[in-house]
Length: 116
Image 1 (cartoon, rainbow, N blue to C red):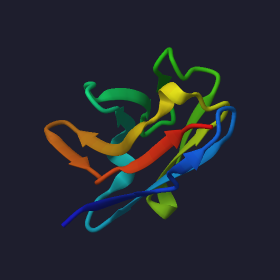
Image 2: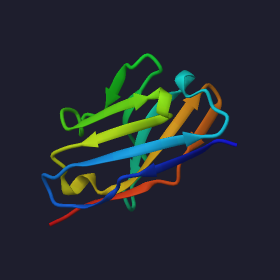
Image 3: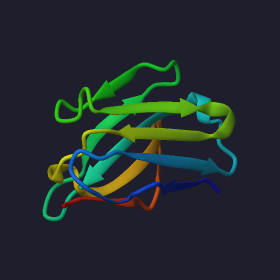
């Protein structure tokens, strides 16, 4: 059974930083998966924030380019999302996702709230 656990969320002031982590456990060869961070704000659809391929190629939503950085440590089965210069509009529940073909795993999410 594969489990993804996100952590690192919290309350931060505008302009602040947070680093989210997503740890995978169970029988999963993480190196073969595309990993993404998604977020969902109240009343809005879930959106892709950033993704990273098994080869390390990254992709970002326009709204976070230059502020967020996704990285992965396959040995630790962990993916990170470094979030800098946070804005109130970044407030959302953040999820990590591992995907390979039709195989799709989601974590439970970690709340990020940006407010003064």
